[in-house]
Amino acid sequence: MTIKDFVLFLGKSLGLFAIIRNTRLQGLRILCYHGIASSGTDESKFRRKIYANTETFARRLNWLARKKYNVLDLSQALELLEKKRLPRRAVVITFDEGFYSFYQTAFGLLREQLYPATVYVTSYYVAKQNPVFRLVVQYMLWKTTRTQFDLSEVDQHLSGEYVCRTEKERDDLAWEIFRFAETRLDEEQRVELARRLGQYLSVDYDQIVRRRFLHLMTPEQIREMHDAGVDIQLHTHRHQFPLKEERARREIIDNRTALAEVVDRPMVHLAYPSGLWSEAAFEWLKAIGVQSAATCEVGPNLPGTSRFSLRRFIDSENISQLEFEAELSGVADLLRSLRSKIKLWRGQPEETMADVRSQVT
Ligand SMILES: [Zn+2]
Image 1 (cartoon, rainbow, N blue to C red):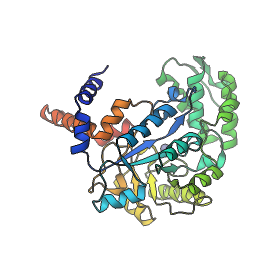
Image 2: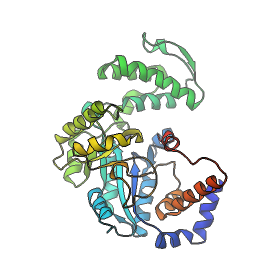
Image 3: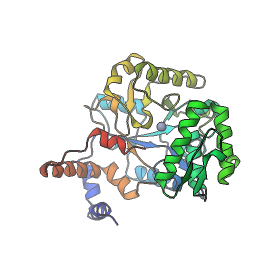
Image 4: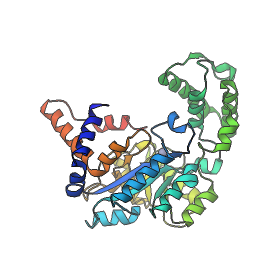
């Protein structure tokens, strides 16, 4: 047990979570999920920060229901926040990417509780219906038992022998493949490359395709979710938010155009891909009709929080139930402000935005 776990365990045992929740909790909490992993699968072991197991997600929803949280629709919550009329324990549930598992698993669990949700969909792989290239490469490199690689055996344009025993070494190898595939190959060629890599690594690419756990929803599935009341919103077309305004604007417009085929409600809310954002974008985002944008920075949203840098708590298999409860009860806010005060007393610099961003996956 870490010191943090111990402090949280003690605080909860002494009833402090409930006291803080009932007296100090303020603002709007926005939860952020990515994929939900089915029972008996290994994706949450592959990427604990991206996937939450079905049981974990169900436990979170049950806890919110038991503790009488008000799970609100995003637009409604932002309006109430602005008017300072938010109910106590206000929460919004969001999903990034638009993974197939939202359709397959998450939606049913949300519906059991009658909870609304927003899905920020990145549209390139919705149209392509291939596994997300970067994820499939990383998954196969994680899954394989091979530790020595000669990339020239996978593609004649790739070269280099690698020995990969650690996650860092596997990541470096993956980036070597991304750099080549994303600058020199088109989508079809990337699929071919992924298939050959699967053969080389003795990982069954076709099974990954069949299970769809690295796929996004099809346009029809998005339409079905939209018709069932799920709020479909923006996450850029190619999952990037370049610094150059013109290119970033193109990402939003392409995203909106692609989704407009199946969504007929206004798409005015954005989640920045990979949590990267800049204040310089706020004005032009407003000009193209974006009304809010969500980051991956943690904390409550208060009436003074900019709508273009909404805070969210990224929940996944990497977060224990105790940490989740501490975050939603306001205990984590208290600990964070205590920690930054202690750092100030000791003369240590406070965590900068760049430090926070570098921790985001
Ligand atoms: Zn994303």
